Length: 130
Length: 130
DNA sequence: CTGGATCCTTTTCGATACTG
DNA sequence: CAGTATCGAAAAGGATCCAG
Image (cartoon, rainbow over all chains, first blue to last red; front, side, top):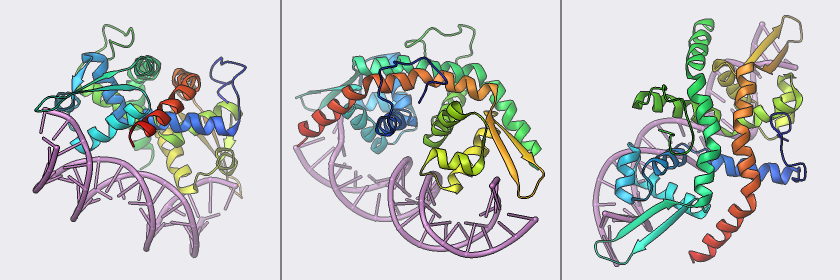
């Protein structure tokens, strides 16, 4: 499937089911809030719920909860609950989460490197379609 | 921003505005249909509207149009209209589009390599939260 | 402090019908 | 063939209130 863009494990199965799974996985991790969380954890390491929300900026607590649950379910995040009152919960990336952050670097770098080209393309397209 | 995951151009500006732009760009290109289109073009090169829709499978013509317009606006895609009847329109990736496909390889490979780990994590999480 | 539950608004998306 | 236009269903997302 990906063979035109990159060298890939030739033994990897190449059926529709796998492609669907891979896309489903990417669809989840490529989520706006997931990426932002990944970035925030990458910068600050272990974080508590409220602090994380502040660092991410603009996320509602509902979305924060949902994002964290999803990342935890996918094994990207480790959640540690301290049985104290008031409750304290720490979140930090797992090895898997860290490796995803690394994998995403290619795209982040691409976006940074080409941001001006893209902005220019958008402007040109905008003017072209009047 | 990304400095914890990868080595990055030290001269790159590092303000909130840039981060927002980069995230906005990634949010667009990490879209499900955009990624699928990228993959399909990577495999088959130049394609016509209807043919592309067939190759992508399951996409509505409305979403196909929207995805193609968006990619074209961002400079990922070149659209060629032949003034014939019935109309013929060819789409193919630009250099920028190809480079994005390459950048996404890291994530695709990550998803393929870790698909079983993720599936297992999901199952474990599911059973853990009963 | 950490979230679950609820309500409501906004956005997304598919299906359908229509045009040059 | 390659779209545009429109409608309604469904999902995403925000705001608020409440509980352990």
